[in-house]
Each structure stands twice: as structure tokens, then as C-alpha cells.
Length: 149
Image (cartoon, rainbow, N blue to C red):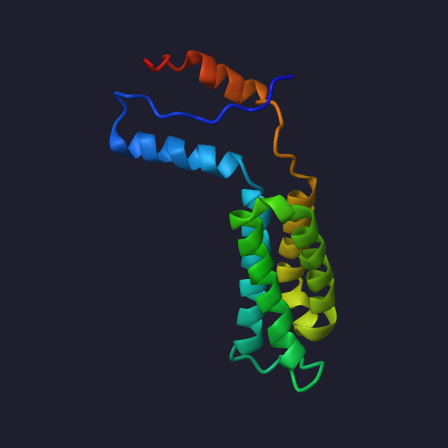
């Protein structure tokens, strides 16, 4: 199996299509969806800490851990997207922080952030950099006209 080839925008493609193709190629070279879900989970948990609700659970050292853990999750999500070389370490830190949010941050952001964080960190952990193209993407690449060199 040959490693995945980076996408190149066609020479006569409109600027929007070239930008979309360039973004898709950038996204394919990193655990984008896992990092995005981990960052969204951290943001959601952080939002539930500041939510104006009467039913807010505070556990931890005056709620300090309730702010540190979601910030760590957002940081791990961004690092997964922008520094994919260390994806195994960041995904392990993200899953531990997500499980820690169960105790410290309103039951993991009322289960929503907990589930998003667990799914995102497992997606990032399982992502492999040199996977072959899927059948659908291979058909799409074969149907695309070749660009002149």
C-alpha cells in the first residue's frame, strides 16, 4: 500500500475550490477531527463552569481544578491539530483530563463534554499518519484531471 499523496489544487480551479482542496490536504495530515472534538469538549466544560445555572456542582479546591482541566483539554485539542507528531502523548493527557472532568467539572460538562472528549481523544490516538486512501477518495482522485507539471 502506497502512502497517501498530498492533494494539489488544479491549475484552472477557482480560488475557493483550491482553498478547499488545500485545507482538505492539510486536514488529512493530522488528527483533525479528534483534536477538534477534544477542544470543543474542553470549551463546553469550561462554559458549564461559568453557566448561570442554579444546578452547578462545585467539587475541588474552590473550583480551581474545574477551570484547569478544561483549559488543559482545549490546549491538548489545539496541540493535536497543530503539532500531530506527539499525538499519542496529547491524546493520553486528553483522555486523563476528560476522565478527571467527571469529578471536577459538573460531571464532565453534564456528560456532553465528557463524551466529546473521550471520542475525540480515542480518534486522535487511533489516527495513523500514512494511511492509504479510502476507496471513495481514490475514485475521486482518479476522476480528477491531472495537473501539468
